[in-house]
Amino acid sequence: MSIPSSKIDYARMRGVLRELRETYVTPDALLARGVLVFALTQLATIGWDLPCMYGWENDGVAPRDLFGGLAFNLTPGNGHRYPLFHYLLLALLVWPVVLLGVLGAPSMRLADLMPRVLSVPVLTGIALIAKLLSVAMGCASLFVLARIARRTLSVSASRWAACFAALNLSFAYYGRVTNVDGPYLMWVALSLDRMLDVFERGELRDYRGFALCAALALATKDQAYGVYAITLPVYFVALPWAKPDVLPIERALHVRRLGSAALVGCVSYGLASAAFLNPTGFVHRFHLLTGTNSQDWRRYEHGWPGLSANIVDLARSQAEFFWPWPVLALAWLWVLVVIVQPTAAGLRSRWIRLLPLAFALSSVATFTLVAARCEHRFVLPLGLALSYYAGAALTDVNRYVSRPLRYALIAVLLLPAAGRSLSLHLTQWCDARRQVEGWLAKLPLGSRVETYGLGVYLPRFDRTASSPYRVQRVAPESAPAKRPPIPGMLEIQDAYGHVAERAPDVLVVTEGFATRFLPSERAAGHVPAPETIDPESFRDPREFFSAALHDRLPGYRVMFVAEARLPRIAELLGLKPIHIHGSTAAITWVLANERLQKLNDL
Image 1: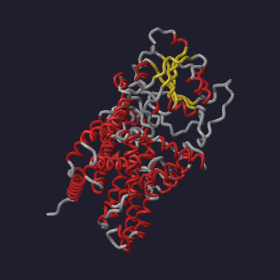
Image 2: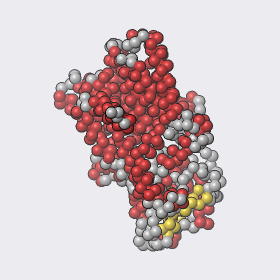
Image 3: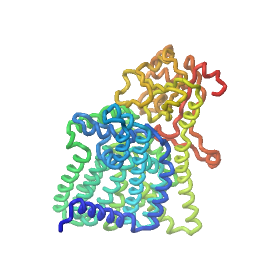
Image 4: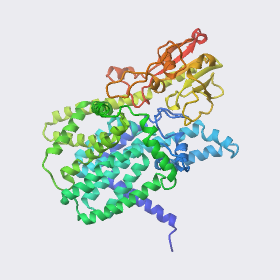
């Protein structure tokens, strides 16, 4: 009797899951318990911006961007900022939540469906599932990194590498939010592990496995190309020709299997990114990525002054991005040790141990510096690579010191890193926008609140019928059309400076949006600040927001400035709020007109 194909697929799926568990989880029970602790700490903070209609993660893909990511990637001629794959993966998980919203609509008409699908319960469910997926993929990255270290170093080094990655500030943050940065890093790590298979066994399935993981990394976020741009020519072309013994197979067979892998990679990427399904949209998205989506946000000017300033800032910011300097010094010291140490054989060779660094430096050289940026998420591969070397270094140092000194060293390295990680958790839980929400709840009935900018920067306004205020969002006619409307919020197209004509009672101005208009002093090599303009008018955004933030806007006064404040005990321990990409520790200014200023209850 034949077995239905659905049962065959299910059995195969179970087999794949069993193989993954036995490969990454089962070999080290202590590591598995450590990853479980990491997962629990991540879960403790995923409710940061929930319940929500819009998330607080800058450039997150959920809750609302899910629909745009699917629609734009699949609409001929249209492109989206990210490829299709992660949106598709997320859609496969959230469809029951969306279906509940659809079934709750009074009819199947679009006008009735949209309010239900875009309601707070449905969007909160989407955001929660997206965060849980990120946590799961972050945990998978730890298991993969540990396996890489276990194969090339030792069991002890694998545990410490995973520990340092878990305490890595950028890795931990992007491992619990809805951005695609954490997910694409998992696929990068898997491709690195498959690359080790190529150098250990050289079987055809190893080449194809590497190509598939690399393609899915690119189909999750395009910037993954930077990881492979230099690494692949060096490790798959130059190195085998200079040192034929690095491969377990002959070079001719290596070339044929590279061709097969390239075919698998191209087909996988074409399908997963929607390039085959929407070729005109792929071309359009390519122009977006190389044009406005990158060049409009570059922080450094073209030429050597900008490049050198970018490199210096990246070097100086490592302690802000990853861990305190003692950990960084230890990691970089072990990089030097690998470079100068005698070459071993197989997966313990110098070239293989330098592979994580090659991935990271390739990404920095061909993406981060090309995009002219210096932010946490643009150096994630470097942070993961340094976790590998920090774990190796601590393992080696522990062999040559006494037990008391070993414990002291571990405390010196891990406690400050753990403290900064705790600071980030507390920063998210003590988000200043919660203070604004409480302040607005005390407004007199019928008050009008005005705000500006993307939902990612805004507090969660009460838009229910029982709210004491009504909220309006203002944008000039020249504002990008991509800004999605928020149900229950009045959208007004008008100059920011026409605030006197609109006469709202309260203005809510957020740092993440307002400061992009404000002139600031820049160091040499940075993009020059805009020229100052006539201060007699507030019609220009720069003048309007400058006046609001400096409490000189006619008819309004700053009532309070909401800033992230950690619990008193955390401050006594020296912990401080952590700023990441305009999403955490952002300041919000609340201004009120003269009528509200006179009310005692405010």
